[in-house]
Structure formats: structure tokens, C-alpha cells
Amino acid sequence: MIRLLYFASLRDRLGSSGEELALPENVGDIAGLKALLARRGDTWSEVFAEDELVLAAVNQEMAQPETAITDGDEIGFFPPVTGG
Image (tube, rainbow, N blue to C red):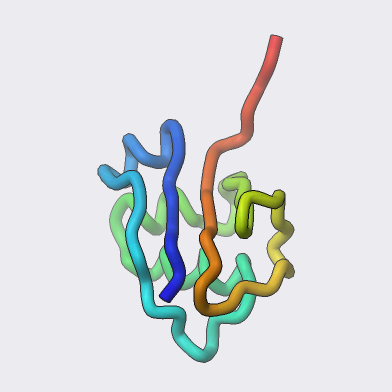
């Protein structure tokens, strides 16, 4: 199982702050996980569309699309942050 956390506007759009998910054998990185979540359809496909910028962290460290994920990981997704 992996723990998914959704922050800020993603939490609002998805109507969830997080969930636990059994990691499918064919999903081994952030890009694969985002594609899996996008296949849920509706808002999920909008939030995790390939052309949408959604940042990720694995075990509280910033991650890239190719960052590996394994059972027991905590993955956080959040929108880009702007400052001023």
C-alpha cells in the first residue's frame, strides 16, 4: 500500500485529502502513478492530465516523473506554488 496526499487546490478539486492505494505491479514511478490516477476519469483525468503541472513529493522529498515508488511510500501531490 502507498499513501497518497492531495494538497491545496488539488484537495478541493478531487474532494479528498488523501487515500491509501494498493500499488499495481506495473506502476513503478510518479509518471505511472499519475497516469493511473488520470484513468479514473472525470476530474481525475483533468487534474492528472499529461499537460497539467502537478508537483509530487515521495516521502517528503521533491520528486520527478521518473522517481521510483514502492510499497510503503507516502506520495504527496500539490499544485505549483507562487510567491510574491
